[in-house]
Image (cartoon, rainbow, N blue to C red; front, side, top):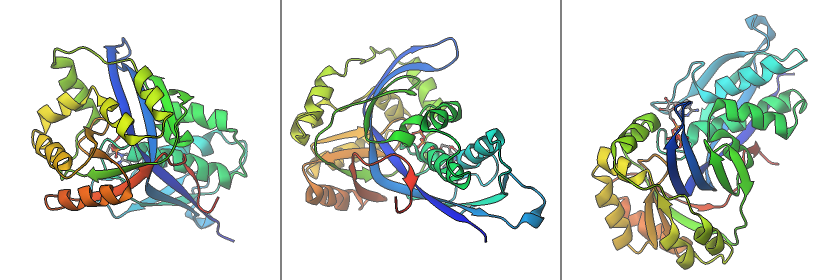
Length: 300
Ligand code: ATP
């Protein structure tokens, strides 16, 4: 019987993103507090017929969303290839289907989350041959945000963002998101940032304390993104988006990660819907909440 395994990939927002020194390996030293969001993609692996002649690898990736690669550069494809490649079993050939709810090149770790979900799904096909620790190692090789999207919740990330420690966080936070028509490539935003004269913000003590209160009014003034100035310089119209969300009643508005998605923390779900309604006059929006889980199998 052909098997089908579906996994859920959750997006993220950086409640704090501090960008420190550029390291010798080309990465920046980061201090980030991540929060996973209910906003999700769905990743399905389907066993392909054995007569495709290519056991143990991905034969095809289908995704209806423009801008998402459908070849082996897709992070979900790479994730499956690595897991199957390390297996001591004889994995089947599989097709991947991606249903995107997370914006592409939007600063919400969509590709990373798909990779995390693909790791979980591929491991399920192998009857969970790999432990979480091994999946986390593979995740860190795939990309800096992949380990967080695997574990989810709220976490402090250091290094490239891949060294994670869970952070205590109470309650649920409600967000309105404003998507941008054109994406921003993360490396371009880092390059822009390196041209700017700036002081990195690497202290997350006050934010960590505020998250323990569960009060969005206390958290809102402490949201911070060092990359925001660079993202705004590349897409100046984001300033208008941020002002519109604030005027509509958001407690705080920030560029998410490397942008260009703008994330607005709101008092409650109703306020988030109102802010999104106002923002939707000039583009696509969503409402979501966090913290959510890490990547997981559908129905589990
Ligand atoms: P991050 O927040 O981790 O920096 P992002 O959310 O800004 O990432 P992604 O949506 O992950 O950006 O996409 C960045 C690029 O990665 C895309 O432009 C696309 O070329 C490529 N990519 C690879 N795999 C995927 C995937 N599964 N979904 C979307 N884009 C992918």
